[in-house]
Image 1 (cartoon, helix red, strand yellow):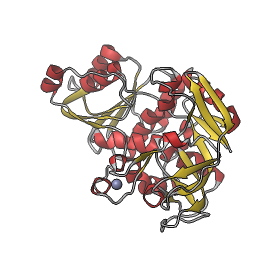
Image 2 (cartoon, rainbow, N blue to C red; image 1 turned 30 degrees about the vertical axis):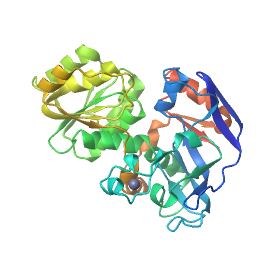
Image 3 (cartoon, rainbow, N blue to C red; image 1 turned 45 degrees about the vertical axis):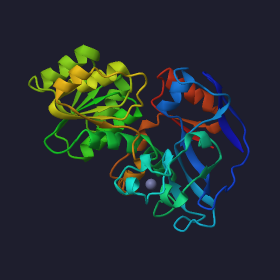
Length: 340
Ligand SMILES: [Zn+2]
């Protein structure tokens, strides 16, 4: 089969990879209907994260089940399924508590390489959620968004305590930030401030429910959020970038007693203990337990109540994956969908 392999920073190729096979009886093999490039794929692409020899890429996937192992009971060939970037059993105590991304049996999907024609999915019964039927083509981008960016934005908004009566600020205008705006709106937030300096992204943020847009960042961004909130800061702040500047911006935008939901993968971030101590801010985040939210998100998409697929502003054949990476790296595209 064809699949994306990163050889070195900036060097992404589509090449022949071995067809995945069932390795253990809890596996499934799916034929991908669509996959995509993630903001987190840009960390190794930019050389910020090491590339350890040629590496299969991709961890966002939807598709049709081709084959299941002998112990798989709830997923069957022919079903259309959505999974997320951690395989999980969905039965252990941690999964039951809603933290499937810390499942005691968890397995990271990235190294299995979802930017490909086929994918092996471990712990298929726990990891995959089947849609009610085979979706029409126009629903596929939104279902694919549920695989990571929507679930991640949703977790960010929940971790930040977004809800009725709350002012929510979102740091980061990538796909996750934009979908955190959508999530905050769905969760009933009263006011949603998107922090973005890109016109096209501001537009989508407003479409998804943002009531205000702040273009300043860093200390100026914090000052602007304070101005908009009677000097107090927001109740709920979603951090969807993962840098020192964005994390501090998120903490400083939050009022005492408020919550930061941080879902941008943190890279070399150090938090000053004294500032944290006196901030009275709750911090909660990490790799989103997307599996926890999937049934609800699939339902909202299936009933056309939300349209998270709009974050895909570039669609390419899998063979042109390298252009998808380039476009996202140069911020010409929010998110690139790849058709195997
Ligand atoms: Zn588990």
